[in-house]
Image (tube, rainbow, N blue to C red; front, side, top):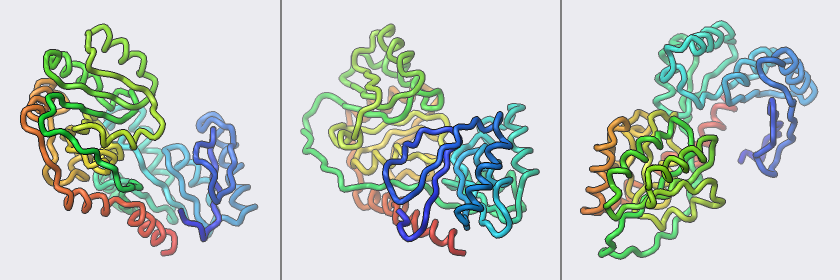
Length: 320
């Protein structure tokens, strides 16, 4: 989305999932730890051959590798899309990650946080270094919201997110076990390694009103057909899926975690992501007393996290 620049996209170990655009793509086909020296050498060559001005990396190991690959005069930007330094800070492996992050610091380095939550983590871990907040974004097109009957006797809930532990679908299963006799249904959209496990759990528990739908192309277009957007995550660095719920003009029922508190519009409903009874009771409340959204407040949040706002901040970072 920055067409006036030359872009060179490099992955350590593909595939290329970025679609056709204005960039040149290279896959190094290397494992980051085993081929660390080889990756540094390969990127150094690309930097020299293509006369790169800025290296912008987006994951832990690409961040570390980029610091060894950047030569003099190259601006170095490391994006942080993870919260391991907070959520898993007691793990020995994460302590090692933090130490390596500190000792490989460079004068030309700018650490970029995707949210205020991540910014606080980085500022705490690296108090003397440069940390820049550029919140993540959503490209939101106007949702076609279908007319919904005021007399509907069923609450249709949707959740979006890959089936991993952080999404906390175990709690959703437990809550819907308590709602078996209630007219509440949920479709969970997303793939992931635990998809079949959760499908089997739902079958074992007899949860016929809960469906793990897997990956659905153009899923965002389907969201306006539901009555409520749910996210039970116990850990997020931003909350892109929640913004998709806003874009679809759905009321929100979301877990009470820092990343969601940061982006949620006024009037959002929160629950304790470790309490199945709290979730079940909040769903009953929605069933019995439907909630209307505040369109002005939703638009304010969507503008704050728009791609235009993001690109403006990114352009300033690149130029200054």
